[in-house]
Image (tube, rainbow, N blue to C red; front, side, top):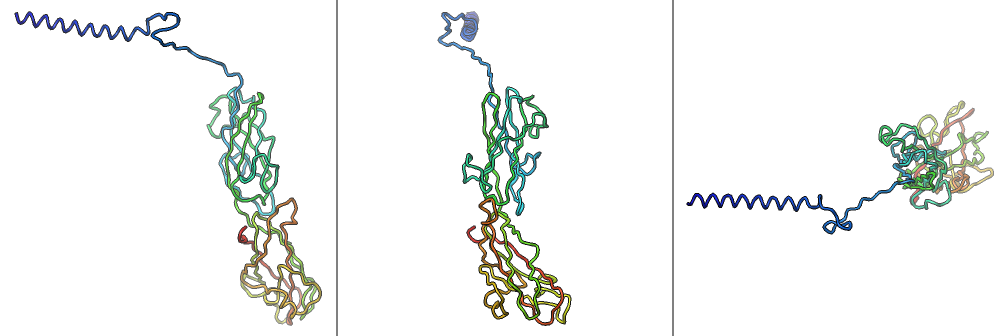
Length: 339
């Protein structure tokens, strides 16, 4: 009797479990087999969407500022004293329609304190409106043309002048395609401070009699860098620190002491002067470097006028020297305070 009741209970339990499984499967499969009425199934409708992009916008993928047309590594800029230097903005552009749709690349290299669309100025702003575009160059970023015929390399060159302002600069690149769509990307670089001077190769005092003072020599000093500078000055005959201004080919002494070569950095004193006169009007050259205030600004215009100061020189010829004399003056540029 007990066994019969237990057997019936077990069968009933199995029946209930199967019934639960059946209802669960039905609830799970209804969304897949039910037929929507008037487009609805259980209050939810899934509608697929599609479109075809006919005109893709181009992209400037990368921008680097560098010193070579085939380089793709960003560099800080160091100028060449007194002359220009070619700087490049290089990188990759892309058009998902086809790279043959790319039509024009332009770039602006400008100091971050000026505006991207300012007029060109050698101190602050440069423009290249027709950068080179190469559809077949080996891709330096992806290793090959892994995006099919969608990418291209570009190179934008600038004749960057040595007196361009130091500090942070931006290179902004714009790419256009033949659908007149465009895209912009940019990167920054740092223009370093540049110290440099331009002078004549010789200070020639001409012919001077023994125990006389030379005529005044006017020597112009031009700033060949991009910061305002003062001067350091020193002189020697054979080697730095020898205490001589010149060595002469004849005479019993053959050397002109460093104290007899003198300069004035601000005022001209023309005419015939004696040794006692130049002692008060000029400063003795020294065998070691001496820093002198000069306030020589760097170029702000397209000529040298605002970056050139005159210096004034004389030398006294003592007894005991004769023949041809020669020596050396070392001009050094040092950044002036506040520049």
